[in-house]
Length: 288
Length: 298
Image (cartoon, rainbow over all chains, first blue to last red; front, side, top):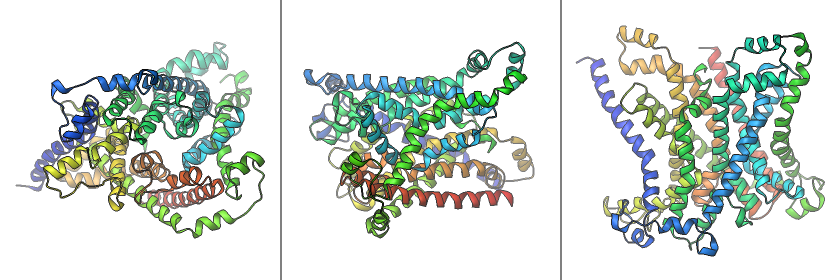
């Protein structure tokens, strides 16, 4: 047998092993999360190895408990989800409104300071977020935005801008400039070009940018911890889950239901827009 | 473009970029500058509240940081953690991208599923890992003691060498999809002709990978190393949520956080962050010089 056939054969088998192994490694923790969210805590303590519970022992009480408000003996996740939804929607809308004109200018217009602005956006990644978060928190306190969802939205916009600009710029650079020029000959103003031509053409990427910032805002934890720890009625889902998990009082399977509620919106959105999102993020990667 | 618009290009460009630049400047740049200033002051929260930026300047914070054994230990932990997660996640991502390169049934949905650890909320996935690894009710320890015959449950997240290893494994799990995504895109962009020529010349699959495919992926790998190193070096959420920085997992960000919230030592925390940023900056400069030189002399 030649080296070619031996290696091909081994690699064919290895490929199956790798694919199966990696898919299991990715999926199993999520299956574990989902199945424990329907388990009673005493069943878990009695038999931790039993990951898939017997059908007659399944319970949805965990979800009722975690969603109900505190007055009704629950943990208020319904309100946390509303807070998270508000923050994430507002942050992604604001990001798009700010980033579309900026990306257009950075790809199409030659203006003073263009290169410096691009570098500035990269500075975000050189410092740990924690060091940005504290001065922002103190500054927002002075402005009266400290313990508010609005303050959180502004912070999230700043966090998502750099990657969003990167995604949109790559896409806009691929749209021929001659379209803009034709519009100019027809007498269009800059604003008209932007709103009537660039935005409709870039709509798919704008959507994936919006989605990206929604996810970052929905998932974010550190700013929420610093800004909102003291105000339980403003907690986001991420913050609520960690705060409640710190103590011993809340049963782990109830919190598992909370994790599912935290994860499901992201998984749904991601399922809808997976292709657009990965293409947007990896744009330009094949050019090296 | 029409001369009418060209004349306004500078003005329009600036007008369109200003809003987003202001937000970034206010939320990112200003705090960084403030941090640098604070790192030269012996400031606690009260001083900052009373005097703002204008406290007495001192080098004491830097002296404290550089002579503190805990700082160097934390730096070492950060470096170990960053290198291990970067190398691990890129290696696993590369293997995954190669395995998913050729078409097979359910390739597209399975590829989408593989990105879940990366997109899912970090709070939810760390919580699941914590529960799964818990010595009393976690499935991993239950399996280990009952099926694999471990003598005792393992304290994955709260005893010394295992905690850091567990955090590293978690982060490889969380971030290999990121490398997988980028390397997958890079692989799709490769021209198949060179590989076919190599096969005609009698190259084995491993030779084809080593001499033809891998060299073409190196620019993407170099970029990923850069991304991942910077992100890992500043990582906070994953470590804080899994271990709280206990049991030898106190990476730089967590140390800064503890200095801020535990002892409310703003000056010390700022100095720690500044020193860390300098280390990162120097490492990046060396890395960029090495990778560009290699590209120039192939």
